[in-house]
Length: 88
Figure (cartoon, rainbow, N blue to C red):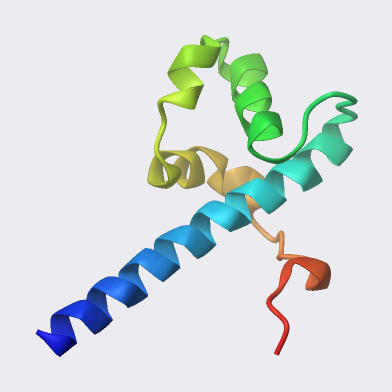
Protein backbone atom coordinates (compact mmCIF):
# COMPACT_ATOMS: atom_id res chain seq x y z
CA UNK A 1 0.00 0.00 0.00
CA UNK A 2 2.94 2.37 0.64
CA UNK A 3 3.95 2.19 -3.04
CA UNK A 4 0.42 3.03 -4.08
CA UNK A 5 0.29 6.04 -1.77
CA UNK A 6 3.70 7.25 -2.87
CA UNK A 7 2.74 6.94 -6.54
CA UNK A 8 -0.55 8.71 -5.93
CA UNK A 9 1.22 11.51 -4.03
CA UNK A 10 3.70 11.99 -6.90
CA UNK A 11 0.90 12.03 -9.46
CA UNK A 12 -1.14 14.61 -7.55
CA UNK A 13 1.91 16.81 -7.02
CA UNK A 14 2.74 16.64 -10.74
CA UNK A 15 -0.86 17.56 -11.59
CA UNK A 16 -0.75 20.51 -9.21
CA UNK A 17 2.59 21.67 -10.62
CA UNK A 18 1.21 21.49 -14.17
CA UNK A 19 -1.83 23.53 -13.14
CA UNK A 20 0.42 26.08 -11.44
CA UNK A 21 2.48 26.38 -14.65
CA UNK A 22 -0.70 27.14 -16.61
CA UNK A 23 -1.51 29.87 -14.03
CA UNK A 24 1.98 31.33 -14.37
CA UNK A 25 1.77 31.14 -18.15
CA UNK A 26 -1.46 33.11 -17.87
CA UNK A 27 0.52 35.97 -16.33
CA UNK A 28 2.95 35.82 -19.26
CA UNK A 29 0.04 35.72 -21.71
CA UNK A 30 -1.65 38.68 -20.02
CA UNK A 31 1.50 40.75 -20.36
CA UNK A 32 2.06 39.67 -23.96
CA UNK A 33 -1.56 40.41 -24.94
CA UNK A 34 -1.69 43.66 -22.97
CA UNK A 35 -4.51 42.55 -20.69
CA UNK A 36 -5.27 45.05 -17.96
CA UNK A 37 -7.86 43.13 -15.94
CA UNK A 38 -6.89 39.49 -16.39
CA UNK A 39 -4.01 37.47 -14.99
CA UNK A 40 -3.27 33.85 -14.17
CA UNK A 41 -5.94 31.35 -15.14
CA UNK A 42 -8.37 34.18 -15.91
CA UNK A 43 -5.99 35.41 -18.62
CA UNK A 44 -5.80 31.90 -20.08
CA UNK A 45 -9.58 31.64 -20.16
CA UNK A 46 -9.94 35.13 -21.65
CA UNK A 47 -7.37 34.32 -24.33
CA UNK A 48 -9.24 31.16 -25.32
CA UNK A 49 -12.56 33.04 -25.43
CA UNK A 50 -10.99 35.64 -27.73
CA UNK A 51 -9.14 33.14 -29.90
CA UNK A 52 -11.80 30.49 -30.39
CA UNK A 53 -14.94 32.53 -29.66
CA UNK A 54 -16.01 30.02 -27.06
CA UNK A 55 -18.16 31.02 -24.12
CA UNK A 56 -16.57 31.62 -20.73
CA UNK A 57 -18.48 28.62 -19.39
CA UNK A 58 -16.93 26.42 -22.07
CA UNK A 59 -13.35 27.45 -21.32
CA UNK A 60 -13.83 27.28 -17.56
CA UNK A 61 -15.00 23.68 -17.94
CA UNK A 62 -11.70 22.61 -19.54
CA UNK A 63 -9.40 20.54 -17.37
CA UNK A 64 -5.68 21.23 -17.04
CA UNK A 65 -4.69 18.62 -19.65
CA UNK A 66 -7.04 20.26 -22.17
CA UNK A 67 -5.61 23.70 -21.40
CA UNK A 68 -2.04 22.46 -21.85
CA UNK A 69 -3.04 20.86 -25.17
CA UNK A 70 -4.74 24.02 -26.42
CA UNK A 71 -1.86 26.26 -25.31
CA UNK A 72 0.96 24.00 -26.50
CA UNK A 73 1.93 26.21 -29.44
CA UNK A 74 1.86 29.39 -27.36
CA UNK A 75 3.79 27.70 -24.56
CA UNK A 76 6.46 26.36 -26.93
CA UNK A 77 9.81 27.81 -25.87
CA UNK A 78 8.33 29.42 -22.75
CA UNK A 79 9.97 28.55 -19.47
CA UNK A 80 8.73 29.05 -15.95
CA UNK A 81 10.34 32.23 -14.60
CA UNK A 82 12.82 31.80 -11.79
CA UNK A 83 10.55 33.71 -9.43
CA UNK A 84 7.86 31.00 -9.86
CA UNK A 85 10.21 28.09 -9.21
CA UNK A 86 10.26 26.47 -5.78
CA UNK A 87 12.95 27.60 -3.38
CA UNK A 88 15.65 25.02 -2.89
